Image 1 (cartoon, helix red, strand yellow):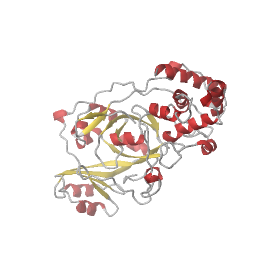
Image 2 (cartoon, rainbow, N blue to C red):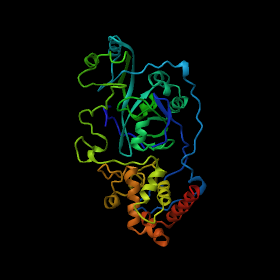
Image 3 (cartoon, helix red, strand yellow):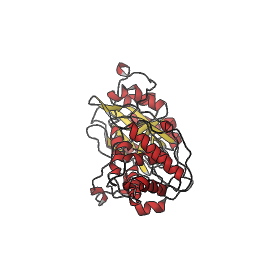
Image 4 (cartoon, rainbow, N blue to C red):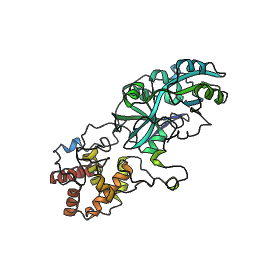
Length: 400
């Protein structure tokens, strides 16, 4: 997917972005609802779901949360935009950092942690930074936005705006990093770094297992810093990428696969990938696969099963992904919902339409008792059926 070293599994999913001038963009934080996911939901799971207050499980996804102010930028922040981004295969020693700073036309150097993690099986490339030190390395429009730096100070993720659109991230949602902690996507901004999908604080980066001191940013006169000189100091395996007008997406390092296992020139790479910008849009689009099925039923199942992708399992019963399918059921009913050539149980773009496909095969589009029975097939519990359909009605009222 990118040039960053693959360390562990990593994350990602979409939002509405507010433009801030030509140099950057910024999106406000959305509210994270504290709801719990079903521990065992799947087509063949049988555990009963506890009853809950419907008002606690049917929030409007568009609600905006005020943020704690990190401090305004403006004249106090003089940006020094990076001209080159170098990704080394191992920690860059101090003596090498000093040597980089002495190169001709190099005026400033910073070394930060970096790596790739996965969320629901999707790889995402991150930088881990000290917010106060890194602020001047961002575009002026981003440096001037206190919400971005407040989010980092709180231990949350700031996603690049292109990554938000590409992965369908929902601002304000928390996602379970595969094999790691939960991480909240608090804001988005135009970071301007090729192959970088987001930034977190250095502390969070350590908890994610990112590689320490492998990403080097160099500032100086645009077009003047010699890439060959940087490569000579950092070694043959380093990737050196121009930042700004000449930026290009980095190539995968040896042994690293592109996102979705799509290799250049493969049949999958030629497919048109269509991904909705939010879970709300995704539920609505997926429901069209089953005439007569309301999107609110899918939304209710998504809430009960994973709190809309916030807790993707595996469950104690072995169910996986945002719609908590058992692997055997997924094999029979899973779909390639986004057209990337892969039926991915962990991807919401496949799992939600897969749930619509499974429900439809069991008669959900006919409504009434057929719908109730179809939901029962999803999880063999009438308490579960009542909970899902109650939530579906609440969603229908909320979004009427």
